[in-house]
Length: 76
Image (cartoon, rainbow, N blue to C red; front, side):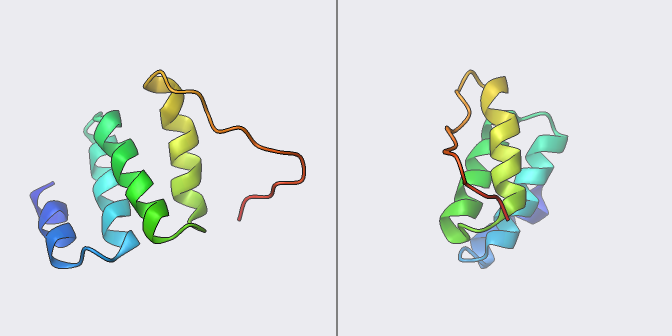
């Protein structure tokens, strides 16, 4: 975990480093911090389908409603 936190500090504009940190938090069963880091991934890379899927799976576990999708919306 420490490695990923250092990586985020060293390369804060990289969606990939936040994705890696989110995966580490997910593996550690820290869904709240995983969700926050996946949201950061989307802030840096709005087309990241892995982060979108992870967020949709995590929201219900944290008592948040999944995002509403409109007809015709596609995921990458």
